[in-house]
Length: 165
Image 1: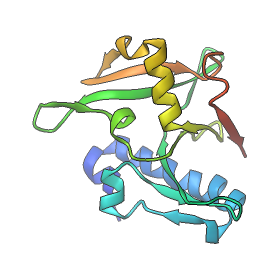
Image 2: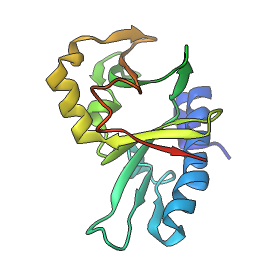
Image 3: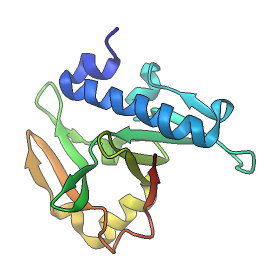
């Protein structure tokens, strides 16, 4: 069966879907438990909102939503990932990228080979990017406008949480 991501984005969508499954199976279920994780990867409405999963704990007042990105990579000894600020639609119109469009509470950047991920609160990260003026430092890659983030950048350390298996 072909996932919605693979159907829409081809090989990159397949990589994204595999990353979602890995995060679900290797991080979320072991850490939170089956009854505290909801899988939204087959829910078209949630997917259009950028929501892959929801998690909760007994002492939390609500469920938190997650968007998984399989774009955490080792680069010259550093971990990096990309924030998609804008992208072109299939009709050629510039639209907000997932960094501005996602309705998720948290973003998880995952590295399949490294068996780790870093996550943060999306609203806090958006605010930090705006405060630092990094929104003006985008680069174009394959018609997407991206910001490269070094995971060891001291300006973000208070926002990042790491998970390893």
